[in-house]
Length: 122
Image 1 (cartoon, rainbow, N blue to C red):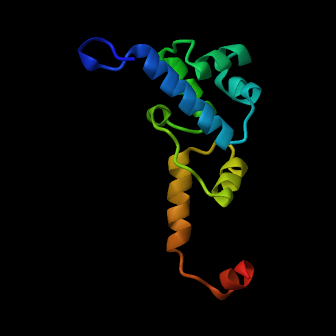
Image 2 (image 1 turned 90 degrees about the vertical axis):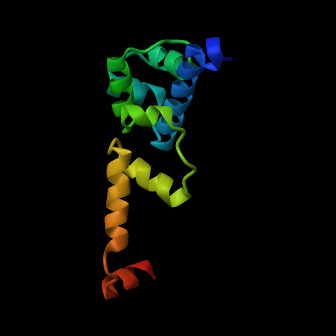
């Protein structure tokens, strides 16, 4: 649905943020109860946000995003599909921010391959 002048309706934005928070939460292997505890809210409130039925303040968006390890800006972006290895790594890293995981991955990829690394991969 769109509002006046073709702009997205605020409800569409609420639903998109909720859908993306849910996707990020699931990528982290978190339950609603886990995410709600991290955000300092009730599981029922978290569930309403994921459904797009509850409006959030800027402060709540910050807490919700950090609860699933993303920045508030990333709550507006649908996560990219991940390989199974990337999903396992994301779950192992808990709430480490995604941008730090990417930076760490880039760092590891830039390391020169050593004999030990080759042997460990075999």
